[in-house]
Image 1 (cartoon, rainbow, N blue to C red):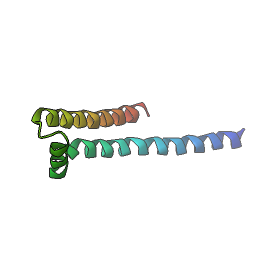
Image 2 (spheres, one colour):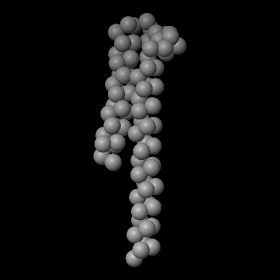
Image 3 (cartoon, helix red, strand yellow):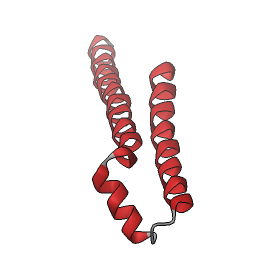
Image 4 (tube, helix red, strand yellow):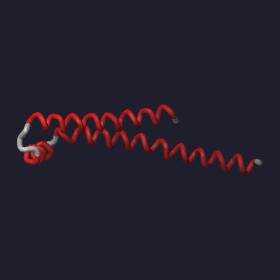
Length: 82
């Protein structure tokens, strides 16, 4: 019984480490996605792609910000659950 109990503890510990890496990754990815629309390169590419339509460029930027926020909120919910 002791060997099984020790083994399950080690497995739980490994799983806990993997779970803690995911929220960090999601927060970093969310911050990158949220800050991307602020770069001049992104703005010039979107302007060329969308034909200099400011309304559509702002919509696309807001979509990226919401996607990044979704990543961060998902990371927080995983972190709270573990």
